[in-house]
Length: 337
Image (cartoon, rainbow, N blue to C red; front, top):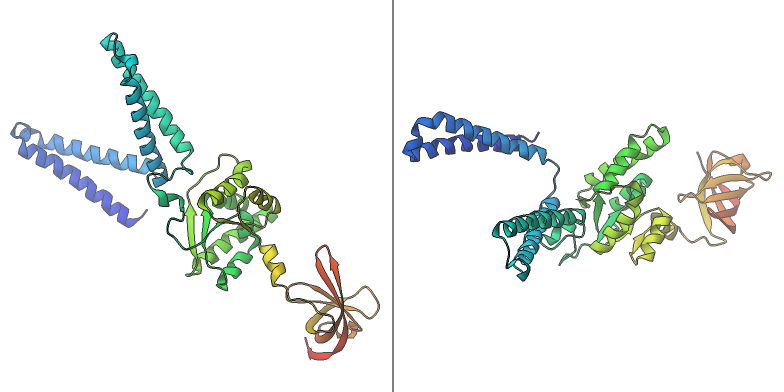
């Protein structure tokens, strides 16, 4: 528990006891009940601290939504009870009707405000990170991006400048994946958590945790699109289906795969490249290597130099479903691997 919070609670208990003692001191009739009053003050202080502990995790967004709901409900009850419908009749019945109206209206308005607290930004606009007079662009991060891992390296280069919005339901989903009994899912989830910690270590990256829950896992994609749309933010994802949904709703989206493809150097026939040959090719005398972007290169007459770094001249480029395949002729050995 936070030490500062413990100190504040202790001070609050002392203030409750002292206030009870001063109350008996100022009212002479109560002077003989000072001990009882101090005990009552202590119990009230403990009760308030227990209420505080029960409300742990209750966000400012929820408190604001409740306040707004109570105000709207009370206003609705007052408008109905002040209408000509209740001008005449038994005063006792009218009083009872007004009481029921107040209870029903405040309850319904509060529940509706809590259910729609993600849309709620009237009382405290900045809770939803709506960019009022803020120049920093916002990016809502999907779980798939954290699991992918490349986002940390991209932001480490400082090519992108934006505030990353990470909803709490994304963190929950990531934690559930990391706790999965399936070793593969567990490894992916832990990698996502490691990437999140790597992002936190980057001082120039602005990470904002958005307090938002999703009752059903099936609603996560829709909620991500809604958050990005309501915040006027972009959606960062590697999920093509989620990207299509965002595009349908007019939400700009960023895809790390598209960025990777855009950063691949243009391959020109006749250009010389350097690479390490790592394995045998399919045809006689061929060897295979890879460029830094994982593009496969088949080098003719390169089989004797497997495990070494060579220079080759590009003679052809073949588009494939996974990218490009390059064919090259060996020019000469540069250095041993």
